[in-house]
Length: 255
Image (cartoon, rainbow, N blue to C red; front, top):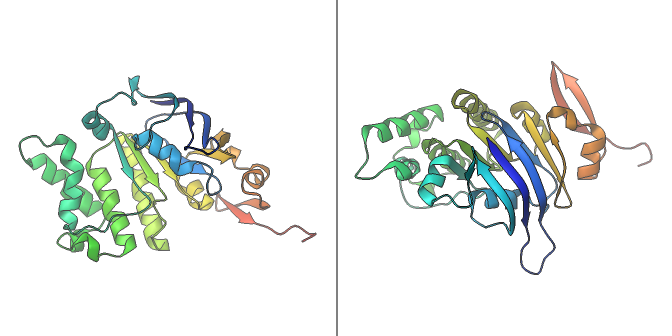
């Protein structure tokens, strides 16, 4: 479904930040991008959305060249939720309706309204629809921007730290909904996330980055204590509780 081949990017006067990235995702996969700060996780998402253009490589979706696709077609295919949610002075309802922009030609149709209302219901935003976005908390704005992305009805959903401003309850509710929608509508999800345990709970594919290169990619079997320590530079133990795997930092005996 999504094929990334030899993707390469470097900022001016810096060393390469993405070095020959190769991976593939199928419909309904949920990929967690994991690694230390500054290794290229967010840069990868920006390349996939064409916020920045890679200097080399290929990005295709079902054989379609994402580097050459026009903006409207790209917006119908792909939605992106950035790490920082903009605090703009428009209502929550209008912000979410902006997700329907790629589909609107001569005015808002019943289908657009129905899609927006369904997303509002599923994200439990009914009490906020008349509020202004710049009056919301960071966590509320984050949920609104996710709602706007889901209103696009994308085939690929890109998320940059989608739980960074959310409390524990909202983290689980939002990621549970993303997983549910991904499976239900066969949406491929690519998310940058720092919490490995949340990634293990809600993702089925993982991509480890070290020194701006892919260290390993695959299912949860790649998240061994040895590989996690190699990537993050901290010793960990991988345990299982009620058939759910957890990663726990540990202290070496000589420390």
